[in-house]
Length: 167
Image (cartoon, rainbow, N blue to C red; front, side):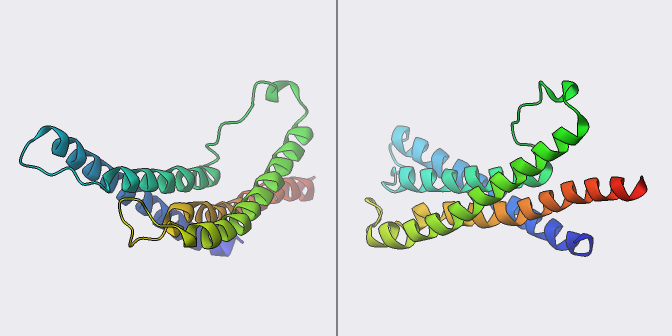
């Protein structure tokens, strides 16, 4: 697994780049929509609100997947100093397994939802665009979470196994 760390780094950078592009697009579209409301010669596009909300949903779930790799998720650590180290490691692994299960649920159920319900509808302001793209962030984030959670689980298990080998 350590040999494919550069692949994980590359995937992380790609998802981070996508989030940055989505944020820039969000800011530009929102700025244009606001200008369109207050500046008479700029037309306010009807599609701006739906596109901005869709881009925000992509950013929210993808950035949550990125937080898994950095270990930056919100977690309860108030009792950590009072718990035995072995219990903390076991709880970390249990949390990894739970997030891994969630990522698989997001991937499978999200894909089913995006292809069935999302595939049948269209955006109100853009009838030519399938709502698949509105629901696609869930399976995409499930995939990203799965990839990054496998690495986190491996790192937790490696930390435990290496310490046992040293003893």
